[in-house]
Each structure stands twice: as C-alpha cells, then as structure tokens.
Image (tube, helix red, strand yellow):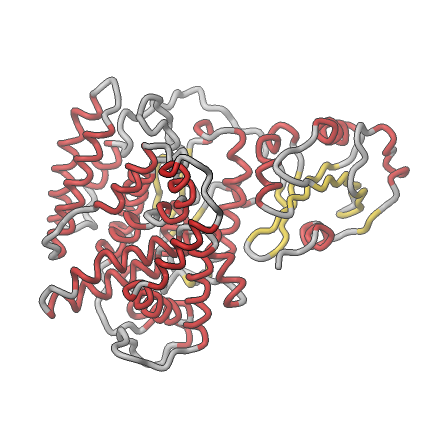
Length: 499
C-alpha cells in the first residue's frame, strides 16, 4: 500500500513539525497542513486533495516564499500530481510524491535559458532528418539501410508539403513495416493491430497522442542507438545464458510497434460508451478484460512471458542455459508472481501487459505455421519482445512492486525493456490527431556517448508548462526501476528531469 501523507512527508523530507507561530502563520491566506523543520529550513507544507488546488492555497504557497518559508506540495496519488502539475513551474514549490516505491522530493527546476534559435516544426510525424541519419548508419545491415533509403525517398514529398498528410504517411510507414515483416519470414505482412489504435484515437476514443505515429517515432529513435551499440543489445543472450539467438533489430521492431496496442483494452470502457451512446455500467470493461485473460492463447502467453521474464530479471543467478519451455514445467514462485503482476495490470485498466499479450497472440499462431528453422528464430524473438514491452508502463512497474516486492530491471539482460522505458518517458508528439496543428517534438534525437551511454537531446521549449512535473516523475520512476552495471549500457536524462 502507498504510504500515508505523514509517512510520505517523512520519507521525502525527514524532519520535525514545528509551531505555526514561529513562522508567522497568521500572515498566510491559508494555513498550511504542516509547518516543518528540515535541512536547516522552515517549510510550509500543503497537503493536496483531489484534482484541483484551491485559490487560497495557491495564494498562500506564493506568499510563503516571500516570508522565508520553503513551500512544499504533498501529492499522495496521481490525482494530486494532476492538481500540482499546472502550477509547478510558476509557484516554484517543491513536490513530495511516491516514485519507484518510495517517497521522493522534487525541487522546482531552475529557469531555462531560452534559445534565440527557432525550432522548425516538422511537417511529418517522423522527422526526415532522422531517417537520413539512419540510412547512413554503418552499424545497421545493408538490407535495412536500403529499406530506409526507400522510406526516405517516400518521405521527401511529405516533408516538402505545406500541410501534413497523415494518411499518406501512415501508408508509407505501413509499407516499410510490411517489408520488415516479410524479411523475417511472415507471409501476412501487415500491422493491422497498431493501425487499429489510430482508427480508435482518430475517432476520439483515446488520448490526445496518436499512438500509431508515436510507436514509429520510438522505433526509429531507438533503432539509431541499437545500430551504434549492437553488441550491448546482443549481449543479453550471454548474460542470461539463453539457448537461442537474439536479433536486436527484430526484437526492437516488435517491442516498439506493439508497445501501446494495449491502449484499446485500457480504453475499452470509453469505446463501449461511445458505441452504446450511453454511459455503460462499470463492469463492461472489467468483464471484457477478464474474458480476454481467459482465452487459451492469452493463458499460454502469460505462462511463457512470465517464464522468460523471470529468467531475465534473475540473470545474475543463472547457472544453466535456458530454453523456451515446452509442455508442462515446474514453475518457480517468481514466475507466478510476475504472472500475477501481468494480470493485475490488465485488470487494473492499464496497457503495458495487454500490449505484450496481444503481440504474442498476434504473432505466435503465424509462427506455428512456419518451418522449424524459422520458428527457432522467430519464436524467441517475439517472446523476448513480449517481455520487454510491459516495463514501459508506470502502472505495471507498480504491479511488479506489489506482487514481487521490487521492480529492478537489469539493463544488461533486458536492454530492450530499458531502451523502450527511457524513450517512451521522454518522446512526445501531441499534435492534433488530424494533423492540423504542427508542434515541435520534445525529443530531438538520441546521442550515444562512450562507452555505451544513450543520452536524450531535448527541446524544453516544446513542452507545455503543465507537463514538466509529469516528465520529472516519469523519468525518476524509470531510473528507479533500472539496475545498472559499470561500463555497460546506461541512459542519461537531462539533468533537470532527475536532479
């Protein structure tokens, strides 16, 4: 269970309560929840409740600084973070909240140096400059570079157009993805499931982000990093002692493009309301999710995904080579705990685990009809992607902490899970779904620094004021969920996100 407000305050800012008269409390428009002494400073602590901060509280927080008090907003849950987010930058107040299983204190970021250089909005969802860089990347196979050159050529007229053409861009990207799938050996080379999410969201049945393009953006950003650091991504096979090959490019393709298909399951209640034309009973979505989990292919995927995830999470204890289980096998306690976390994530109405289970169901039936040679490579490829997808979801990481006691993703054994969580916590494209309004992207590119650090180059001017706090919380939660090894793969956020 999350800590109480008092426990959260003590974890985030160890100190003692003091009397209000010592802080001239009568001068504040609204009395704080606590006056607090910590770190040789006096603090005015405001406990947030619900999704809105009252006007007197906002005035009181603003006045506190001028009185020599440090203001602090305590946000016990996501609702209160939602209330604090719009005011975080302007009020310059600290925030205490629950991140990565413990209470943390977030200081207000320092003012940013505004650049005089104007950042030009891309007329395409995927920047053509990124495609050009990928087509020149020597670490990628020649066949993939040729495919990227073809994609770049198809993007030239899209980039020159004065008005965005999302339908054409979707067609071009789908054709590229079909070529990748055919190269793997899939005869039915389509990405209907990721495209289905765009249909729902264009109809207004999802969030403000278009997850079809968002997934391709993640894919291409990550592809550049993998091209430069392939050995670190291939190395997970030796670290976890897996008895099958790992193709980093194929694993990343499925991981990136299927990571958000679970949004259709998360948003099922809203979709049902739109279809029925009335506000449906709360149990319609719950019933659909339960039925989804009861199907044979999903039950099989739960067992298989939890088995490989357990191996990857506990790779440091690996003594023998691990092969994909067949028939019935004796399941470890950690496997059952991971399965419980996957189920809780789906039932709880989130999307991380659902995306992984959909990938397994979508692909394994096709893999089963292939030759034994192709099965020997594609079965572990799809399964490895399924294990990498759930960890990008904040709610799934919480489920892991509840069911397994912790959520520590070893980057050397699960590099794709770490890369997806890292990119997804930064990358943003909240342009109108119809493509009417253009917006400069927040993540400009990924930089690779020796020996193996992947750093995010971001444009702070592209982010809304109300999004800064959420970006900081997400970045800290991702970092708190990763386990590092010296001189191995590492991820570097902008300092203001993790300071």
